[in-house]
Image (cartoon, rainbow, N blue to C red; front, side, top):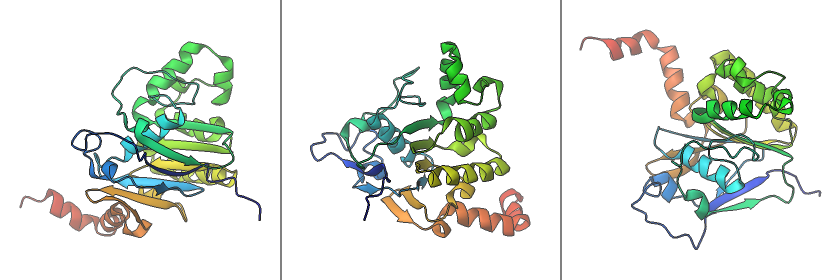
Length: 247
């Protein structure tokens, strides 16, 4: 049987020789302190959890350990406007597949504007062609992200996305889901931190819940994102009454 090319990134764990203060950030976050050989799906793995649960912190650390810059982009983009990143990446051990991805990108929603500005300042026409021939600043935030999916991401890649839905309307999230599937079919692997119940619905994806007990694999239907969204849409008059009522 031939070996499968994916997953490019197989597992991540804390290095056995890692030295850190468990009472200091980010190791005092329960999920971060409990990293123990996270195994990734060959196609799509999601990180979910409340704000502050550690999902973006872990995704960022994985990206830095792989060689991406602090603010995202390709590995060639090492632009930074802040030093506010943890040193978790230095304590991670990554197990990677025998075949390296041909393409890759680290998207941070909060710093995507800075990366777009940096790329514009390069005045490189090859950069514009990679994003569909148009500056990212000449598009809306949502259009810029879709340009990544449909033009910049070339397949055979490892893509790390931190809350990509921040820029997308519900209909664009559906379009993004389709684009992610096409790229997964084209030998790509995704690791995505998200709050979107639409993106989380991707079939057969692995979903890791980050919470006060650590990191646990969950089914889509057991996520709070699915349960709350379904309940609200099915009973929204009553839920609005409960939320906004005088009592």
